[in-house]
Length: 223
Image (tube, rainbow, N blue to C red; front, side, top):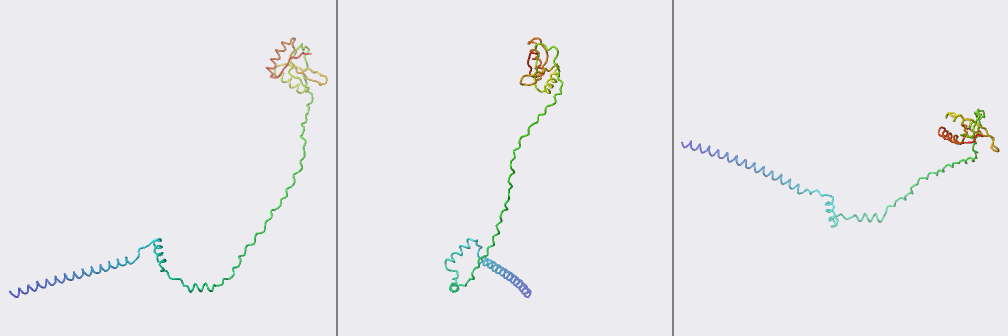
């Protein structure tokens, strides 16, 4: 019984040792992972802190100005400047630029304007008056012309007298032509209508003639 009890104690002790080892191993792994994570995070934070924040043009200019005022800029090479001033390099003489030759002046062609032709005075053409041949037949006066008559026109042109006769005939009248030769005035053709015994009847007829023919008329003695 004692041996069995000892065996059980050994088993319990061995189980407890295994548990302790497992817990210790897990703790070591957890600590290692935490340490590695802390190192990685620390490096990232250090790299971000080391990198300067981007600056715009005004900030960069403000940052450079104090450095330039404080004399942080490198001093110029005085020896090189002195040597360049002491022994200047001779430059070749500048050749004057050749100007292009001006184009030849163009002379405008001289145009000769012909003189205007002399004005000639042309006499206006005269209208030739051609007298028609006096061949028209005029009606003769009636046998009884009475004391008064109505005269519708008088002319020295026989053709014009013939036209007056035609106009009166179209109006339904019976005109006739009385020829009269006046002293110093030549031959006249008097176109007349009607023969009346008194002036009142002749004047009444004159008004009818003017209304029908629409031409002036006058009462005249027949002889």
